[in-house]
Image (cartoon, rainbow, N blue to C red; front, side, top):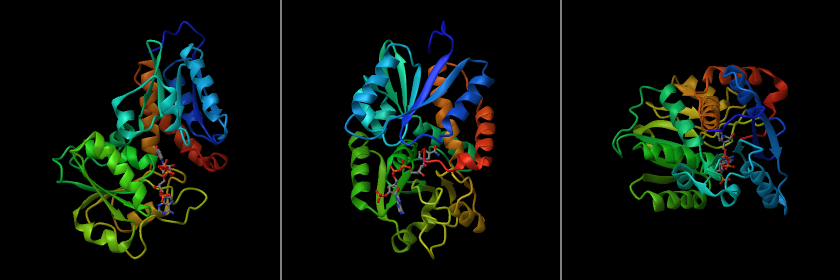
Length: 307
Ligand code: NAP
């Protein structure tokens, strides 16, 4: 928590590109609802030979107290790890930092994507028996990028068996090897992202998570789910994509009569957890939800590239 003998919180987001990010709206709405002065700025850093030096300069400003909290998004969630002084166990396990805090003069890299996803999952689907013994509940996670790592970690930590379905088996194998190296007890598997490879798993799946960008604006007619393959008969589905709020995958799941949510709940929850770390205060999710709904209705804001 920051001692606010100052005009207000100076918070922000590092990434590239950022010009249409939803984060300033979410954080500004929450700060206002909390009665706190402050602003949330965008700090775009163009990828190039000077990237790391620019990151270090920005992080030094935080060390000196001029910035009170930073979020990190694509493409710097991994790069920034070398520039912080320490990491939380969650960030270390996932291998990515999306939130930076200042504690006793040291910069700590945290990751609120994993708890953000898991909290929203529990709220969206209370029927899922969270925390079941390993092997009892199985999830299929589509993709093996940064978001898939956070989701897989969160589920595996809660006792789920997770199969990662991918087009690039090497990338998934590397991700699973990293997670197993830290937590050998995790129950993890890999399969190809094809009807043929997924079909045998269908009866066992309680959850399908799309952690690929397929379906995101501007490619809104595409679904990551293999053509011709029915969805698992008893699964809840979660699409991490939130632009648009209703993706082709979400429509497909609804058409089959299964429960499904978009990634906007995770976006809000990961932002709220970061703001709670910076302010030490409870963050009203509803204020962020209203800001997200308003942003989603604004066409200018939906053409965004933030992740
Ligand atoms: P990323 O690191 O670029 O990873 C993307 C993954 O999707 C990779 O495994 C990639 O496979 C796979 N993929 C990409 N295009 C594909 C295609 N056409 N078919 C099959 N697989 C494909 O991205 P990320 O950061 O993980 O983000 C993924 C999505 O999650 C984005 O839409 C982002 O907006 C969303 N997200 C949402 C939240 C939230 O709060 N709701 C948070 C984080 C991310 P290859 O390795 O083969 O390229």
